[in-house]
Image (cartoon, rainbow, N blue to C red; front, side, top):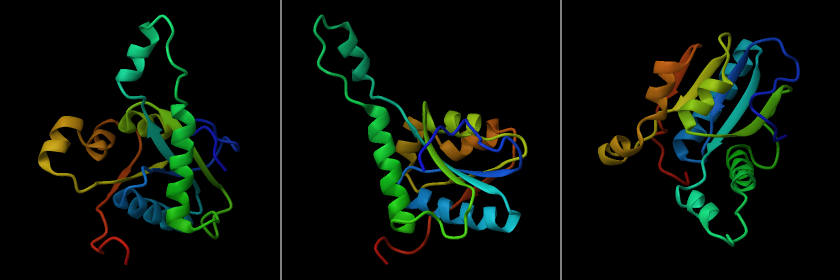
Amino acid sequence: MIESPYRDASGAGRRVVVGLSGSPGSLAALHRAVAEARSRSAGLLAVLAWEPPPEEFAHRRVPLPPRPFDWEQEARERLRAALEAAFGADEPPGMPDFRAGTGRGPAGYVLVKAARGEDLLVVGTGSRGLLPRALRGSVARYCVAHAACPVLAVPPSRLPAGV
């Protein structure tokens, strides 16, 4: 079920909110979030953040811009692919209150906005090198600094990909 990460159908109860990008680190965070949600009898919300590339805004100034690419739809497809990579065709087994959605904006900002004070926010720490981290920043670090709820930072799995 793909829906807005900012809407909670029940309006009550604690949730475990997890950031998802499809990377191995985010899949490890998703599996940990499932375990945390089960142990807390909480709902689970998986969120994939997206942003259009900077050149997308340049097309708006052209007199006859090309048809815009649907970045939100592409994000939903990436979310579906990540969930399928993590769990197969089904939702996480034993998770009756599972929701997934996309949010527009920088990943850290979207995750902090989706999580409430009584939630647990789970993020992957990633394994990027120093240069990419310096250029784009750390989502986990942003969440720890700005979230109004506890944040669990999950390191990437030590297993090689495909095992």
